Image (tube, rainbow, N blue to C red; front, side, top):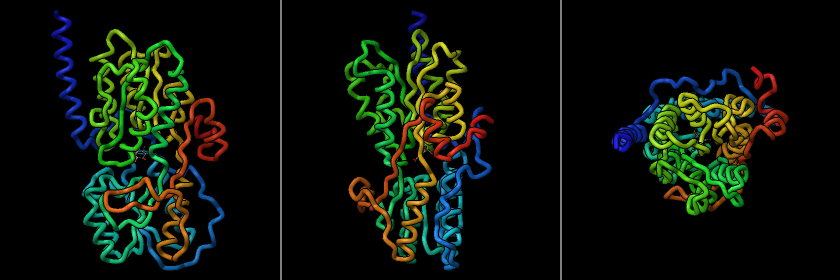
Length: 382
Ligand code: BGC
């Protein structure tokens, strides 16, 4: 009886925290293990760019945040590659503050940029400023995240976002041999920000693979939180992921271990890692933890066994594709496009280039990440 009351109390407390978690702009206190800020550019941009010609054109690059390493690399790669072509670059980060991003873009327009490249925080907040840009004859390229509900965007450079979800799902399916096993595995989900179209697509891809195993009982989600709405984490907050994981462990995994943390982002994987360590998990019962971005810290955690896998996204390649789009709108060149169907933003279908995401774990990180020149062995050993 006592146990029941305690359980009920815990569930109420947990529901309250989760509600707060999903509805808060959690740019607040830094978690113990923060994403390592990249102080130097990790990857050399391709050297084959044409010689710089001082064309006097200026490109405004609006990036979401420096709190996660990937965006630092994205911004660095874009700046480097555009400057190599002779463009002046105004690179701004908005630290996940939606209004700050609006002001930064307004300032870019006022300062006379010729083209805008935007990786949005909450693209619904950008509709007006995008209309202003269109009015002023400034073309916009969407970078990594689709710009929703606007006809002011010309092209979209990204990774195959549904493919990211499928790759995470297939990794879990294969490594746990879900199709053949007679075992059951417990699983909890940590999905991306509801204002980011990528998060929805990732979830769709992931569930395309995993839903049948939830339906037939091979995967058991003890919290019952499997829908996107129940598992999304506003602004991709690492702190909220940690809090959610702590709540799941206390509320539902007192008597049974959690086997799989299906997370959509390396930052979430760090949050889960901290929660699991706090709950006393060790090498013996450490769960499978997925992630996305193959950040330096995540790759180190993969090597040490604290994270199982991540999705490698070569930001050098993404920048390269995006730069061809900038050239297309400014110089009339032909951009490379490989998708003209999937990315309907509510107003138009945006011609897109989708780069291919690759699952990395301890077995292939050397070949993909080190041999690919993304990180050196020295960086990984630091
Ligand atoms: C990106 C991911 C990234 C996430 C959090 C998404 O829009 O596609 O690569 O992990 O944002 O920054």
